[in-house]
Length: 563
Image (tube, rainbow, N blue to C red; front, side):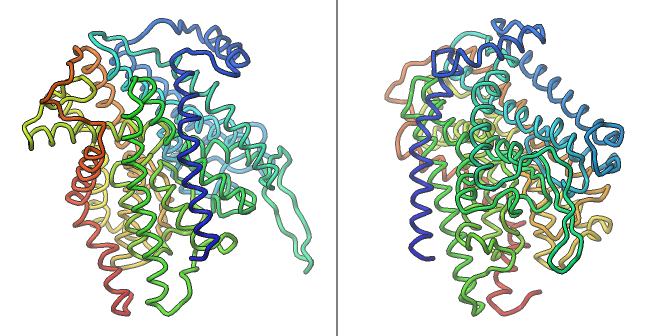
């Protein structure tokens, strides 16, 4: 690493910390109904949506009604996206005449974008028409992010309110998230990206003649608008097959920096929103600190592993598969950010990272995407671990298991465990099934531990709703499209439903005054306890699987062997 790399890392981290209270405070005002700049400008759109859809935004729902609305809305999005793919030849704005998508790939893609996973088993510019890209994928980028933010709001209300079953209105929460937060931020970012050279056009693909006289097709489309929300909404699905490694999606060092910052901006800021809405800013910063420390630790290990592995192999840097325009440090920072967030975008090939760096990327997701995580989903996932930490620590030291004045009871712990197990089940069980299935094994490009890592990474990405790919695995088969699609559904709603149940249970409780027997959750000691619980659960659950993949591959590399 050189001095400019260190300066950029420092600027990145400082901006992330500095923007957290600014955006977090703004989002708190949006959700609590306080006045803020731009509210009058967006109210006409918000109220127009209510009138058009017949929504009474003032009617609040209990957790079961909220869950029903979430499931119904997402099912409608899934069906719509599935249908426009399998009938895309019949839709307008398909200048290249791209054929209909087969049912298995259409199912996988529809589930992927509906669950905020954005796993892509295809190359966007050759498989989907501009119409499907814009009215299908880009729209779902907004709606899936909005769903995660809405579910987080329910949990915040469940913690902050007392003796009630009213937890807000899903349709109002979704509308406000999109109208006042996601749309304005995406518009600003898209304009800046266009200024950097990210293309934004409705013109069909261009055919040019190269200097050697050969004809070449230059793909074109509404890229900047999709790029902005894919990063801000922690989606990650790219217009092009190579995602953010494509110069039309990510042309300059400045665009690269902005897109990396956008990946973590909303998830980080929501910790401050949590503090404001619960009336305990210190608690919000405690959650941010736990996420930030784990992010730094993972980044340091990935950088150390890639640079030291290069020395061990007698090279200056492991540049195979890396982004040569921006350097290895930018590739590593992006990989850590995208796997800490629920964001599948990449600007380099993760399969080309050193074994330990690839392991950290996997572990970031295996921990439940709680190191900032997705828009909304990262924080409610972290709060699941907070509940478990309070319960475990309370048992260990004989303190009352309470969190922010609410007693943690058996039902809360059971739901928290169910939410943690949902992702773990997909990763371990689906991987085990696949390594025993000849059909699944035929898609591998590598044998030995690296081949095992390809399968393990794919189901980790699906179960954690991340969407990044290790590369090398041919996932565009009926088997993987269906299995990964099922995994994404379990990983998404196997967490959302328990979270909503916890919110409903906690909202009905009385607030218990803090006493000498209460375990404080707003101290640096609790940060360490929380991180320890997250790492212990991840280590105990996944260490055997990781040992069969990246750990063995690392030991083989040190021994000068590849298999």
